[in-house]
Amino acid sequence: DTGVSQNPRHKITKRGQNVTFRCDPISEHNRLYWYRQTLGQGPEFLTYFQNEAQLEKSRLLSDRFSAERPKGSFSTLEIQRTEQGDSAMYLCASSLGQAKGYTFGSGTRLTVV
Amino acid sequence: AQTVTQSQPEMSVQEAETVTLSCTYDTSESDYYLFWYKQPPSRQMILVIRQEAYKQQNATENRFSVNFQKAAKSFSLKISDSQLGDAAMYFCAYRTLTSGTYKYIFGTGTRLKVLA
Image (cartoon, rainbow over all chains, first blue to last red; front, side, top):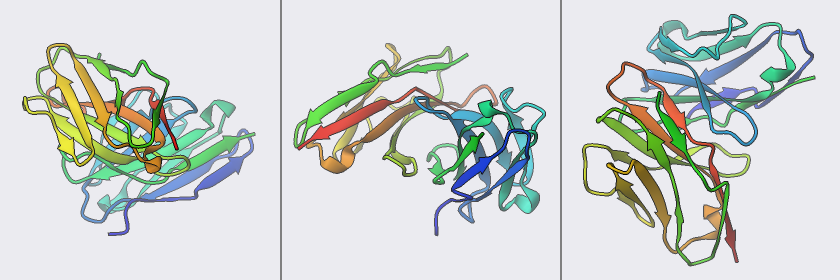
């Protein structure tokens, strides 16, 4: 069990570019979540996968955002036409059930310049 | 909609002393989970302790314990014998069980400083 892995750790991109982040959950965890955290705030929910099915999406997830989890393993989060307001820490978490809490990854810090 | 409020942006505690971090939440539901997470500087969030709302007994994990007051919708975290490694942001989180959503709702966090 190597924990939840997120890549890259840091990403600097120019406004208008597309970016993609990857999350590798703990292998036996069937639930995967994406959150966004801005400075001084708690994490805000973006989306949830159970196996390969995307079961919930936040209204924060505009049409520029898309997430996938092919084959119920790793997940990707893509942001198209990035804006400065997208600058944040993007956190991935996984869990085996609803009671035990999440295991978080270290996050990907996105800076849009 | 459920909300989670952490009214203490920052707290300080002397090493070896006890500190209590406050969390209140608003919900109309009866079944839910509550969590405290720790986020050390530049490191990943770690689950500290969790509480099932149907359990009256307060959860404890070594030096960490909670005071869960369901009627008052209060969920405070007590850290005993504080250590330098306890310095971090602490987030309170709520997870509903009844409305078909899977998300956690987090508070804005409390930064805990531990003084040597």
